[in-house]
Each structure stands twice: as C-alpha cells, then as structure tokens.
Length: 153
Image (cartoon, rainbow, N blue to C red):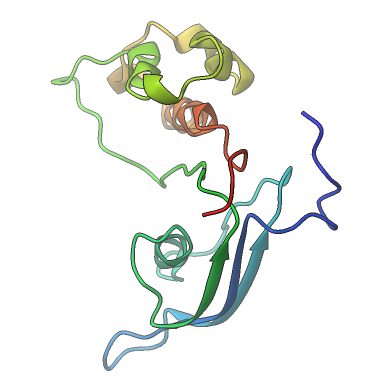
C-alpha cells in the first residue's frame, strides 16, 4: 500500500476545539485538537476518566459534539474498544469472530490474525484468550475494514 507521507497527507479525521462538559462537573474534553492521518497508528494512553471514549464517540460520530468542529475525510474507521465482555456461554472462536464482519473482508480470514500476532489462536474460543490476545483479535477485526481507504463522507 502506497500511503502519502503522514505529515503531508490530508487528515482522515480532524477535530478542532472540541468541548464536552457534563453539568456541574469538570470538563471531559476541553479544547481538544486532533488530526489522524493515513499510515499512522494512534492510541490514547491516558489515565481513566480522561475522556478517551468520549473523544472517540465525538470523532466517530457516535455522539454529537457539544462544541467544536469535526471533519471526516473517510467513511472507514478501524476502532478497537478498550474491552468487551466474552463469556464461555457464547462459544465463538477467534476466526468466527472475524467472520462476523465477512461483508467487509478483503483478505483471507486468517491473514489479519497472523498480522496481529495471534494466528495461533484462530480456532481457540474467545473466552480462553488472554487479555492481550483478545486485544489483538479485536485489532485484526478492525483491520478487516481497511480503515482510511474509501472516499469522503
């Protein structure tokens, strides 16, 4: 994949001066500016209760921004949640979990698992994976969407 230099590429998502304050509480987002460019990985490494999920919700259009501006130049976003519950009561292998997104697949099913370092877990139940393995399976599923590859929204 030939991607433009990250510093010169048009942002896939740009957020300008985002604000979010619940009533009678400290601001969750206070003047946040963000640019996510092609070919760059981004992660939010902040303590709990610092607005990471709120920021994603605003940028990905899950929740409207209270104030500020968001520009999206792609309709494909790869998102990996902090965590999600998986129990043994739902017998789902890592490979089957990826097949839930089958409409969006562009590569053989096992390739994203290998790419994220969990190819060995393809036939294991999600409930038996470690936290790190589960995060890598979730990342593999996000990569199936080929984030940042389709047109403007």
